[in-house]
Length: 129
Figure (cartoon, rainbow, N blue to C red):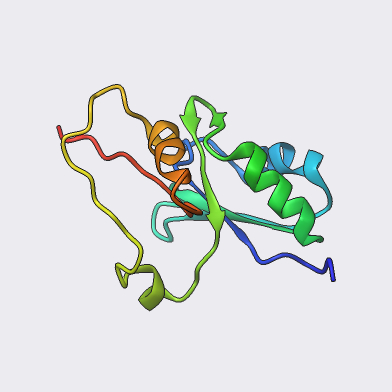
């Protein structure tokens, strides 16, 4: 059944991204039930991530496949199915850390490189300062 999708996690958001901006990006893929940009309770500033829930799972899958690492206000969005169970997220199962990457490797290049081995839920390059 093509029922309401689980939420998509949308990370690496520019501080100026609002719910309206996210809605405008995801709405072309189908009816959206819920959009939220998470904010700091004390300052009301964006925490750099949010959630989008579609009325139909197929629409969410299309948005995920199409928009992953698309730039929004100059920053590539990290999009994946939301995992609210923090013990699973932090378990380390399936996570890999790669050091010594060339400076020109970005999130998308890393994602593309490892996709041939199976489904990649998320990839992120962290640059040392």
